[in-house]
Length: 196
Ligand SMILES: Cc1cc2nc3c(=O)[nH]c(=O)nc-3n(C[C@H](O)[C@H](O)[C@H](O)COP(=O)(O)O)c2cc1C
Image: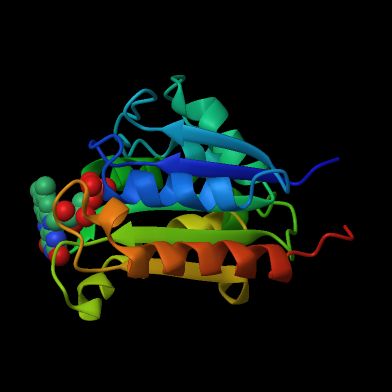
């Protein structure tokens, strides 16, 4: 069985910086994984209602397109989340997705029904307009919540944090940023546990 890589693009800007960087990452690992890319532009996720249903049932009460996506987040071998930095955090689309994963939090921390996934890997890819690596300080911990409830241990995380990319085509013009992405793809392939 090929390893499953689920990539989620959250930017409202198709073929913008984070989406293009994600595509380059997927191209670089082509043939190594069964890849599925989901864009929140075409699979919109509505916000969490805070109803508490998931804390008892481990399921979300809102039966929308998010449900199959959440199960894929739970069951993939590699989870990749791509987001632009908006107001020092992930964009609203990414945040809504993360909030909706409260059912996975409940499975892990309240109901203890989440499976053990010691080899599951995660990549957080973010792009920011400012040229200042500190711009990601408040962004990565928000994304990290998703990876944690999805079963990715801290030691199995990679971060692709690309600052100084503001205009839509800045990533496609930055050889330096492209090298970071290609190196991260090679690192993923080399760090994967292919035996299990
Ligand atoms: C609403 C909005 C808020 C933004 N906030 C920030 C910010 O706080 N810090 C920053 O460095 N860039 C900020 N940016 C710039 C984006 O992070 C940057 O253009 C990014 O590369 C966009 O990625 P995308 O093309 O994948 O959407 C913001 C852009 C928008 C539209």
